[in-house]
Image (cartoon, rainbow, N blue to C red):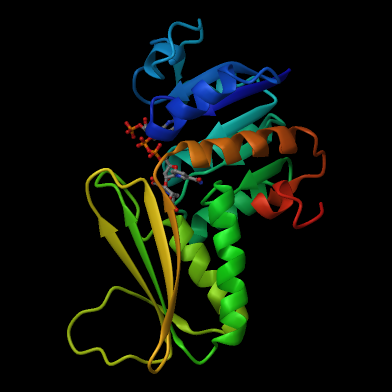
Length: 262
Ligand SMILES: NC(=O)C1=CN([C@@H]2O[C@H](COP(=O)(O)OP(=O)(O)OC[C@H]3O[C@@H](n4cnc5c(N)ncnc54)[C@H](OP(=O)(O)O)[C@@H]3O)[C@@H](O)[C@H]2O)C=CC1
Ligand SMILES: O=C(O)C1=N[C@H](C(=O)O)C[C@H](O)C1
């Protein structure tokens, strides 16, 4: 059995990860951490009934973390600290949290010299194929205007989404360094740029479109998630994959899905 600890266990994604872990016969929910719902049963918070694992205050993680893999769906600053603690203790990582700054990444890269970590702004298989389609189209449409639009629920804290940012990086890696412009206002004639735009509202789980706009035509590549289970299923695959990896470093879903080798 793979012993799994979940950080952010009271959140939208964390609750679903708890449910998926306890329903999987290869996995055991060892610990659940959050900064709210402390002391409550993680199964009850996840609406799957009492499981006997209480939510522990994440500020105690340093003293009590004991698992094979820590899964983190929290907030950027908290996640960086959770990654530090896990790496100090040799606990492998699956990190879905987004909103990291360059300074956060410097720290994460340092910590992940000690343990293997799968880090991805999007664990859905569909989005990982969407990225391949965007990469392919970018190779042939380098002179088209390329824009990225994302739509998420009204509770999302960071913008633009981690997925949209990674999409922009993929486009940049193919067409060369075009600057990224976040939203537009005032007088702003289009230059050599990739526009990234964020819409927030209601309960939208997550939608991303990359537009390739030419003269007289356009292509739109869209991924729509209408259930967070799409992300959770990928994260569960990542937990099982990383549990078998010993080489420290940062991995992504390309490794988990077999597109890249360790
Ligand atoms: N990679 C992927 O496939 C996906 C990534 N995400 C990302 O995952 C993250 C979480 O999303 P979501 O579940 O919707 O957010 P939620 O706000 O619903 O859940 C996050 C939970 O983590 C808690 N928390 C805050 N700080 C810490 C900490 N240091 N340690 C433990 N728990 C903490 C929050 O408490 P409080 O609210 O009190 O701060 C909250 O309960 C976001 O960054 C989001 O972008 C989301 C979906 C898919
Ligand atoms: O916060 C969310 O909900 C999501 N966040 C991720 C991101 O920022 O890319 C992935 C997904 O689209 C849902």
